Amino acid sequence: MKTELIVETPTHKWLYFGRDHEKNEKIIDTNQYLVQSGSQSLLMDPGGIELFAPMLASLVRQLPIEHITYLFASHQDPDIISSLGLWDQTLPKAKLYSPWLWESFIRHFGMNNIKFEPIDDEGGKLLVGDVELHFIPAHYLHSSGNFHVYDPVGKVLMSGDVGAALEDNNADIYVDDFAKHSQKMQFFHQRWMPSNRAKDNWIARVRSLDIEYMCPQHGRIFRGDQVKQFLDWFAALNVGITN
Image: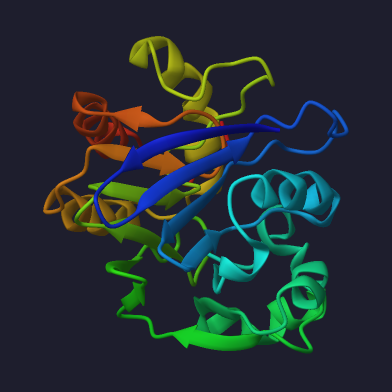
């Protein structure tokens, strides 16, 4: 599994984990992100159950496992959180932050030790070590209860399924040609994002943030001016259609 440093500040760093070359070809590829500050860390959308072993192996090469103190699930989908039952055994003292709406669904993946911390619809904040992270509402994009994670110091937005595209395992983790990459995003966003109103609300909220890196759950990371390019492209896209 590929591991790469996205950004590092005096107080914390963001790490990327993805491009699992050993995954079954019929399983969607996912990106996992971790924010580490001192002896605390937040692991975001840790992946499906099939990804647990390579994720754990990659993580322990970067930090002591007990430094993973928080987990985050942007929504209830199995590709990002069906590994929860195994993390529950590995990190019994950790806390899981996720939309309140999905608690009774997420618990089906197994949760005997980790404490569930519900996020209200309006969002909230979490202090991880010395960095304060913000839970940004992204409801109906594509889940009816959904959040993204924003770091105002590192200027990073973990954008969940927004900005997602399907890539092969050998692709770079950063967008290099936006026009070409947008062709890979179009069907996904039109089919999986059900509401133009929700899309427009999210865009208005995100345009007010200072973002240098937009990190989706699938595909490549957007940097610099590409973030505005994506927002403009998404604003012009009609979603909630099947063809």
